[in-house]
Length: 285
Image (tube, rainbow, N blue to C red; front, side, top):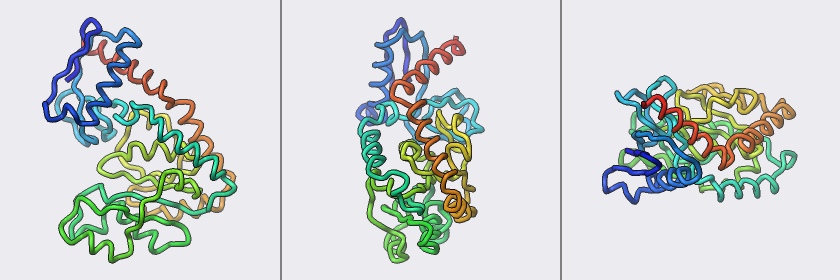
């Protein structure tokens, strides 16, 4: 719980979370903003969880939510509040190394098996595993591998490894050698990944779910990204489309990169947070 009274910031939370990086980044950002501008008197509760899919009975600030949960208030996530300095630099290096004309016309993804608890009965129904299975069946169109098998019953990691679905981690900059980057939700939104793939001068093939973050409303399908059904049933069709429409795909990639640079600079993220707290203070009164 955060309270600002006469520009004095105070907070209350469980002692075990004092050193939690989500809390430390969030507190540092609020302190910095409170030094820069005269924040109004306001009192709010912030969750440190990845995201929520349902109402919780009170107005609650969250990093991500289901779009239908109207009483949940979207705050920039704790990594975004740092401004992503190292990440922005890494992507800029990758953009210079891999201009559009030098990229491979293939979809690419790496990530862990978040998004549900894997069992012997459902392991192949989790979206990220389905993505790796699709890539195994269509290696000419997509390279997608799991880097870590987590949130699962004992024995599943070895079993999934044996299916040929696990690969080495790949740096963000090296993702950029491919024209098409897939974004699939984990336990909630993919957070920093969606940010940097939009910045990457690659086309983003975005799994469409109900999960949203604070800036999702500014993004338009086929202008900033290519939408893909939640069950990934049309993914191969969408990959084929971008392969056959190279100039349109390049323009979508350019639009997405421009959106991040023009709308989500470190300063823009703080401006959003300032407007958010000012608007909430009016309602709170």
